[in-house]
Length: 276
Image (cartoon, rainbow, N blue to C red):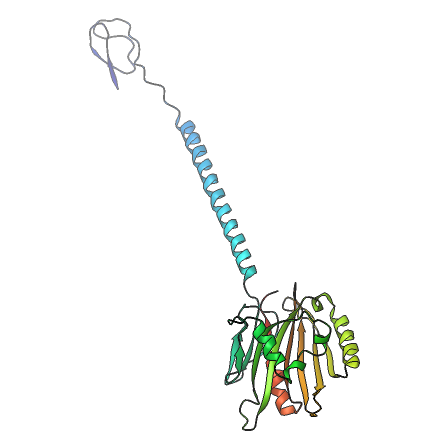
């Protein structure tokens, strides 16, 4: 870099302080002060670091929010609680209850009474009340809780492939009263109610809970005689599945002969609660 003598305008080198032409003293050239390279780097690094932290924080908050929303969403979704190892027989179909609280499987030929039909829940109660045999399906607990809420009814023939088949039905009701009882209390109550109402309690079992899948529940097999005096018995496979608010009482019923009860037990064992 060069500069000029202010007296004679002679071109001088940058480090010359005496003009070689006129011999006068000259000042070396001055340059604007620039930040040192290291200082500039520190400033840029600081700015970059602040931006990176801001971006990272925003992404972290976004991920956490997304995970929280996903957890809330999944928590509201149906989850399998019971009967997860049940295998679907050939010619049967999974039936999803209209409010998505549970499902079970039934033979294709069975007829469903839809609780979401025009007449609503009353259609289930009316159908059960009009059928002398099906009025007994919720015994003995139907005598205890008059507030049972019927949510599912299906009727059909068993066994499905038989030529001379018999009537059968599966009914599901909800009870907030029974949900307040422990399995041990339900077992004791079933024994008392059966004795008081001349109902034969054939099996009375507490099914152990599977960790993380289901709560302990009660399985019953009850048999009732036709109050009309026909001598026709009705045997029901029942499951009392507890939940956070309501207990599901599942009752599948037909004649007591073993060939019919095998089909009924398949239906009852397939019941899967989808909501807590």
